[in-house]
Amino acid sequence: MIYDPTVFENLKVAFENQLYDLDTLAHKINIHNRTDQLDLAVLARKFTLKFSLVHYPAVTVEVILNSSLQELADEILEAENTDPGCYLSLRVLKFVEDLEIQCELIAAILDAVWEGDIQHKQTISYEFGQREADYLHTIDIDFIPKLTEENMSEIAGFLQSVLDMVEQISEI
Image (cartoon, rainbow, N blue to C red; front, top):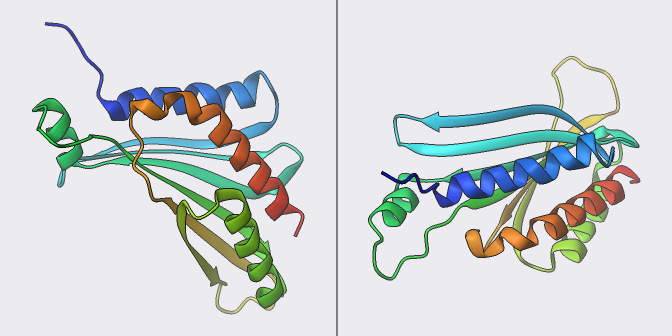
């Protein structure tokens, strides 16, 4: 029997390789955490790698790759009229002080960098009882087109755009 990795496995390894190269070889990022999960209740896969830029450690970003049971089944069964793939998201965490101004600037950065290929949500939170002026700003970015193995050659350019975006957000 020949092992043929799934689209999820191939994309996960490609993202891992590129991100670890940015950490260990290029010294552009510091990786903080990595998770590789299998949800047995719904047979879904999720890979997350969390990092920050070396020169901007206060902002962290998570690259999140998801694949559902339906995607896996379509791939294994070679279902007609399907294009099995994965869903890609980013989660950026940053502390902000001036909510209105900083959130508007971040929304403009997201629109400029990703040119409409995303859906995004900005959430502000704080710990009750804290008197500090900083609020935790969580930026969730979902990429509209599904990733397939056809996108493998675009990962390096995509990650450079992520680094550029995080640098711009860090400077706000």
